[in-house]
Image (cartoon, rainbow, N blue to C red; front, side):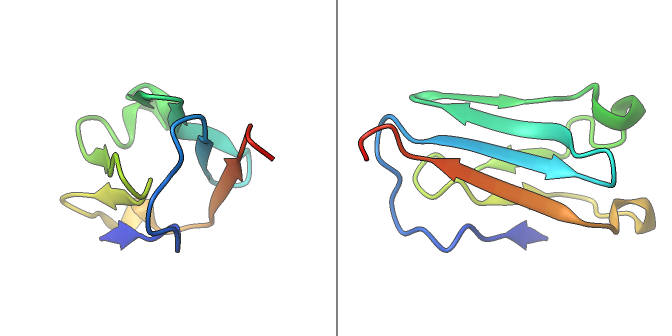
Length: 81
């Protein structure tokens, strides 16, 4: 399953935060050139199953499970504006 950002190409300094659930737990973050996937979020619920696209910031969840259902929030901050 891929959650699309709707962005065709990120700028170098753009920051992306992907959050999940009612507690808005950060599950993936991009800050400049660095992507970080949080494997410990929600007791390891997404461990080794998340990938973030370097160009668009879209988040892919592999081996989807019923427990992955819920609300996902995306926040994109541009430092150039």
